[in-house]
Amino acid sequence: MAKLEDKPFDQAVMVHVARAGLVQNIGSVREAAEWLLRKWPADSESETSWSARKACLEALQGQGDAASARQAFTDAAKEAGILIGDAFRPPPKPKKRKR
Image (cartoon, rainbow, N blue to C red; front, side):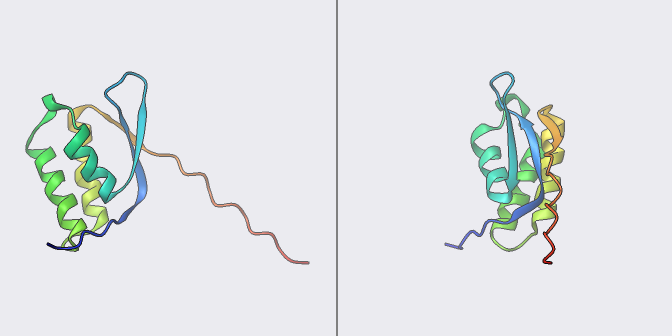
């Protein structure tokens, strides 16, 4: 069996959780794949969600990249009506200068 290696997204994706008012940030290929397999809304199965699963699996197997998997996941989440958008990342803290 091939080793599956997680790859972080450059920007996390925020999605609605089935329970009202909850949000989850999906920050890597593995998290997106788990979401697609375990938490995906049953009434939102489509060609787009299956393509996202395939893109995530390919990225985990080293045959695809995180950016493609993220885009496929984002497209599927948008189609399913659970996409909120990009997760906010605060800017990096400025480095203190030595005196």
